[in-house]
Image (cartoon, rainbow, N blue to C red):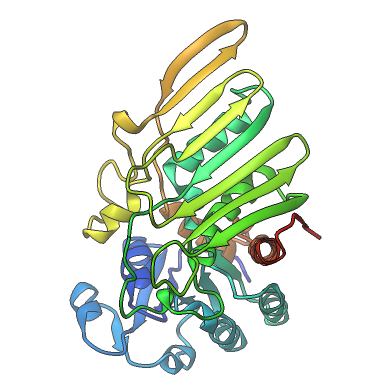
Length: 354
């Protein structure tokens, strides 16, 4: 990777125009002058062309790999294809952003890290939830020690879908499918950002919906010295509770609601819009603590979420040789923790993180 003093947009190809490409990648690439969205794979239909007339629509992944003008490829395909398609792109000399989860196994993740190094290419996993406004606010609460010594952290990522969604690979039994890989990869990544590698994990993972083929519920406990971290998710939560619950020696912080960026993106709001990522006041967090001898009970304004910062850092890492924020080694650890969680659930015991 080389640096340059002149402004030169990074040329990008997107491997799929499904929900991920349509909602989470194309809007940020096309609206950021640091990038040039050049090609999109859409195997049938032309909706991508209608929304992005300056991009070329192609029907196969191979057309991205063969285009020497493309510098960065977004691998946003079913999880079982992450290894092969990311490897192909790296060996074709492309930088790669791969959708979460990184891979199905930690062995696959390690392989891709080695391939990226051998080809001197950037490799990053799209862990965009680090830039959720609620999580960024929780980070500040923890880093500023507003609760004293933190002893208990609980996070929820719940949904309500009491049926099996038809015609999607995400609901079919296969390696790397299920809610733990889907939503758990986000929650585990956030815990790693806050607290680093845990000592051990205790996990309960299951299927709650009738007729389900993949896990749709998990309860993970990550064990740290003096700190318990609980991560929970279910598709059968119709009445939402707090998203984050933090308790420390001096106080507590509770945060309801969900970062608004995803819902805005789904209805076509662009990330360049005014007040992007800002929450309404009724979902601001509740702080009840002791600060400098004073009892403080107040609301904390949620920081604006901003997934654009992920892509800004990708540009800086490629063009300016700055530090990559979402390193593949971090996402490798996330997959190792998922594997340990599956082992813990199968063996009904606490598993040490090696």
